[in-house]
Amino acid sequence: MTIHEDGTLTKLVVISSDSVLPIDAALEIYESETNITIKETCFGTMVTGPEDTVNKVVKEVVEMDKNHIFVKERGFPPGDDRRCRAGRGGGPRPGFHFLRNEIGMLPIIGKALDDYDNNVPLEKVIRPEKLKVSHLKDIIKSEITR
Amino acid sequence: MTKVFIYPTNSLILSDLIERFGHTPLAMMEGVHDKITTIGIDSPPLNITPEDPKYGLKYAAVEVPAGVRGRMSIVGPLIDKAEAAIIVDDAAISFGCMGCARTNELTKFLTRDKDIPVLELVYPYSDAEGKDFVYKIGEFLNSLPKEEQS
Image 1: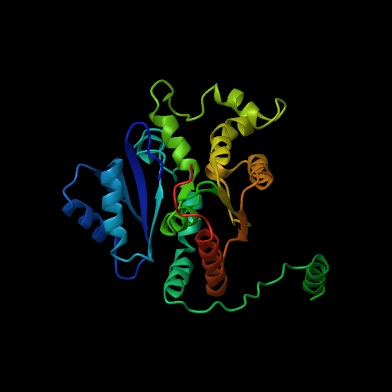
Image 2: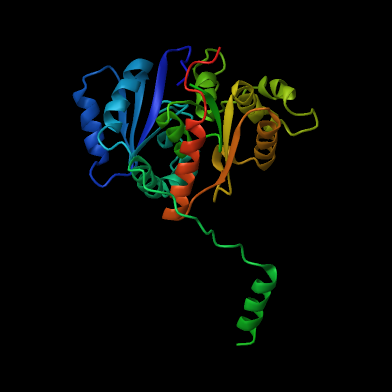
């Protein structure tokens, strides 16, 4: 990860595990006794502090269930006035919709990572075709005439 | 480690997979962090300054809306630094800070136009598609050099 000039880093730890809960991750971080700030959220935790410490702590958390705990960097620190809901009158913070959308896919990705680690061979994927306009018209006609 | 640019530029899944396979993700969050922690430009509530649309002229023409140029002032330098890229299309939603369709088009164009290895995929919605998605990304990332490039 890139080293920032100010030496700090904020990371989002998203938990999509059957065996690890966000509170478990938070406790693991508290136990590490390092000078970092964490915030527990509905999807996991946010960790902010000196870059080396954050990377070390996050690595320890990921090791709890490595294929089902996902991490990305976050630009704003937790509680920043420009993003925190407390000062913005509620509602989802900018960027949350996309995060929530990706969180919905994490069980699929976690399972695929398990298969990748176990060298499960890849099967051919058949993607459903997009609906043709002519077919859609037929459906509409059949609904109208019913 | 290879610097891999990702599209969607704030993707959790891509950012995580790239780090997991031993490379460095080039994501929007990195640019935003640098902006908001630089003294003198932390004027709330925005993280785009009046200077950014001017800087964005390097990537988009003057008649292009300021919003596109402002976004490109963060995304453009990431593409410049990229040594490889992963583009994932067909995101069910790409709004929030990804919301500008023209910026997204320009980002993808500049990435494809650059002479770097690019992997293009679509988001998975089933277990089989997910497996295909992860295996292709794994194969692509394993084919990239792991040592520091000078």
